[in-house]
Length: 356
Image (cartoon, rainbow, N blue to C red; front, side, top):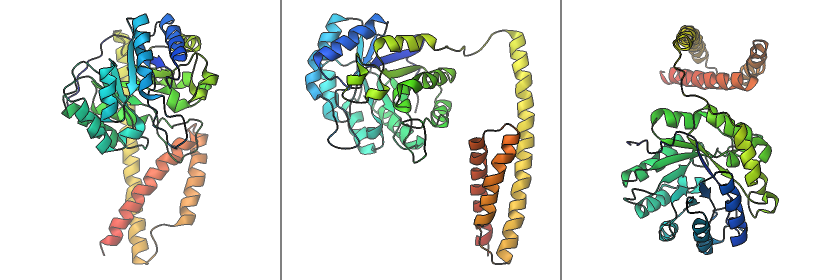
């Protein structure tokens, strides 16, 4: 997949608007408020694929005349909507929608993605943004992007909206930042936008998510904004008024990608050299630990003892975080490391048992 860098505004792309286009009056009032804050790309849900039935699923195509009216009143704005089928694409393009995005519930299904890809085949000036799948599956996300690349879409982008897992979290959808970072590492030219609204699920968490995205050099944000969020027909808790959105955006610090000062670069390289040496030491220690795991595996196999020892594992997962805490290491971080080490230990010992 050859991704082109097609967005070169020089500043983060802010896309904002209501979760759903509910009424003409609501949409026009919200758009008017956003335009006054300087927003020029408006999002609005026309169709809303919901997890469960009997939830508000959008007003459908009756929203298009409202969108046209908003664009007539504000000629500089562009509109972005979600599409989940070829029919949605046809109606969106017929009604001069400028930007399309594929939602998380659609990205999970390659058949649906391919249907949409065929419907947009050959479009050169209409950006197609693909949200991450609901489940944390990077390959599935990349596969969806590849389908649009294969049909000749030049303006492709990815939206990080968080993931649904069984983990307890303060967020509506856990960010799992390592997944979009890996995506960007593989495709540096790919436009990457963060969706703090769907990650946070609550207004009071929006800023920290948006700021972290900017700290990680995301290319923009897509944020839900409503003229009266508490009366919104969907996702009320995560929407901001246009004024509140402007206030939040004014607090976000945009980081420099690099710093040209020679002394800064020399100091930074010196620290990075120390990190490289420390990493070598870390891997040497890890290698020694896994060699000991092999010894344990051979011994247990020869004595016909089960690979997994629950009592031993419970002891490790209980005291290693305590050791780490004394060294100012985050408890969850230590647990994650040891879970990975344990998984690799099980794999190594399984291979040893299979040698018999």
